[in-house]
Image (cartoon, rainbow, N blue to C red; front, top):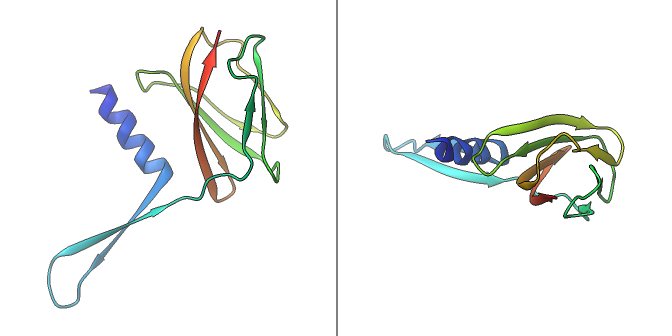
Length: 113
């Protein structure tokens, strides 16, 4: 069940769905609008071994960060005003990191050892 919530959350956060009704029928047509990827996104070191990860992009604007475990549970949500994110409180494992910078969004796998 949690898997479905994660998929729905991911699709909600990282895609926009626009519904339009055809003027000649009652059928709804949907158009999916995908957010653009963040330019020159780099996350390192990955795997993380010392509790801090550096996140850089082409523009280095303020970023919204969401990190999920493999079960789809959100384990961290924060704003990143500089380049370094403290993940020392997270257990070793594989995570999904979702990053939003202005109107662009990206997702990556993050490994913590």
